[in-house]
Image 1 (spheres, rainbow, N blue to C red):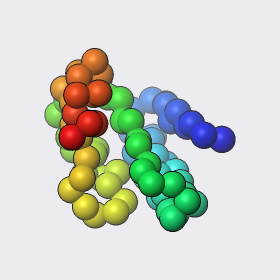
Image 2 (image 1 turned 180 degrees about the horizontal axis):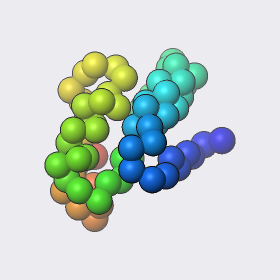
Image 3 (image 1 turned 120 degrees about the vertical axis):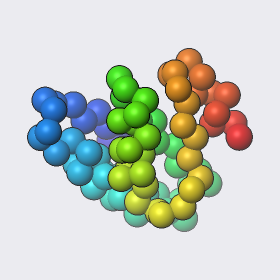
Image 4 (image 1 turned 90 degrees about the vertical axis):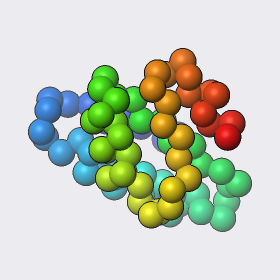
Length: 78
């Protein structure tokens, strides 16, 4: 599958499941593609900032954090 959507009630471990999916996807695609884009959509910017750090399986700081979904293209190009 090329796309994944993880959704459920609050507090049931979605972030940990998403982290596992991201890690396995990166592992599978590493060396095969030039770039891997992961879009994380959240209803609250403060929660999104907190979870982006948790979801960062590579430990780097190379991610874009848009405040609105419509601003994501302007962030990703950088």
